[in-house]
Length: 163
Image (tube, rainbow, N blue to C red; front, side):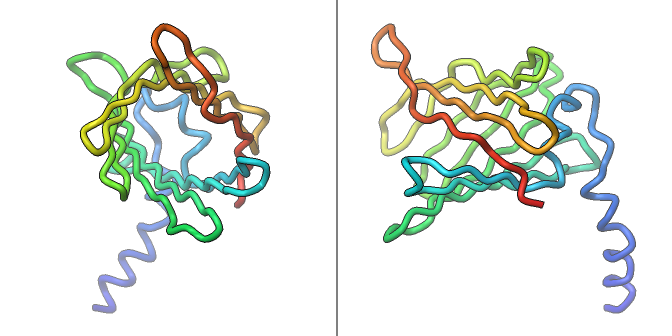
């Protein structure tokens, strides 16, 4: 047991600071950090914590939305390189049973999440998002939902690094 603990203590720092594969490099600024934003006029907070998986071959994002008087809404996203499709993709699963799959592209300091479908309780919703870096310690997350042919903002929040 002591040997296992010693090995974990020795290896743990390298897990958070893994060198990501080239395709995930644009997301590297997120890894090893937690980010928090306040939404809905201060009524909700959303916190995301990112860590490398499998030596930088995938990136995990665990998030929790805290709202007074409600159970926490939690989800987890895994970003990975799809070598057949030649693009970064993700799988998102949340504690209420919903999920989505999509892709991520980059445009300079912005991560683009093209239109994807969220499914929960047998219903679907089309959404898209973009995360734009704002210096070393923040990014803006902007998500939109589709109704017919038009898009409208679901939320726009500044995510601040907390560690």
